[in-house]
Amino acid sequence: MFSQITRSTRGRPLTSHETIINLIGATTTTTGLTVTAQLDTTPYPTGVKVSNRQMKNLPITRDPWHGE
Image (cartoon, rainbow, N blue to C red):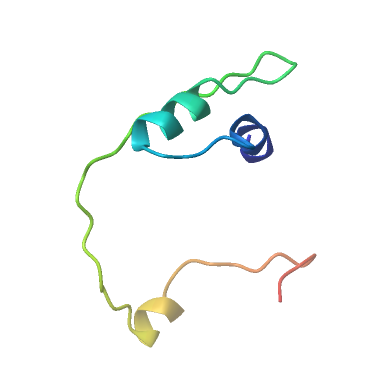
């Protein structure tokens, strides 16, 4: 859907959250798929550090096709 959303917003100034939500929400595909969008105003902490140990313990597996 990202490519469809990009097409919907192309050439339009993204001047406010409302504008962005409306443009994303108006996105459809020729096969009938639609997008629902809403603004998440939940505060998220910044500056959170992840240790090397925590990173190593994440369940991330590499795909053989583009695993590097």
